[in-house]
Length: 59
Image (cartoon, rainbow, N blue to C red; front, side, top):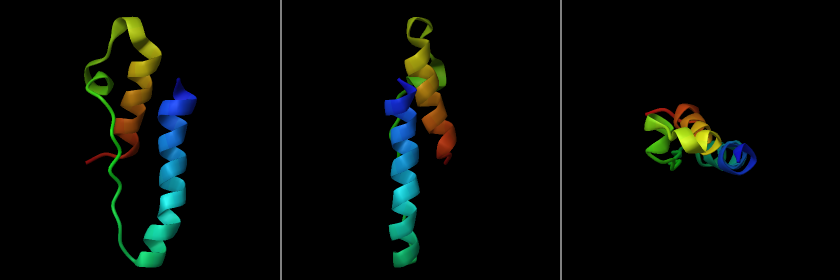
C-alpha cells in the first residue's frame, strides 16, 4: 500500500522539482483523502499512507 500511495507521490515530487527549478517556479498539488485525517480502523495501511501524503506536502 505504501509503495503505491506514498512512494509514488514522493517520487513524483522528486522528479518534478527538476522541472520547477529549471522554470524558476512551480507548485505541488498532491491529492490524499479524508482517511489521512480521520483514519479508518479497518484500513490502517491505506489511512496511514494517506496521512503520510498529507504530511509530505503541508499547506
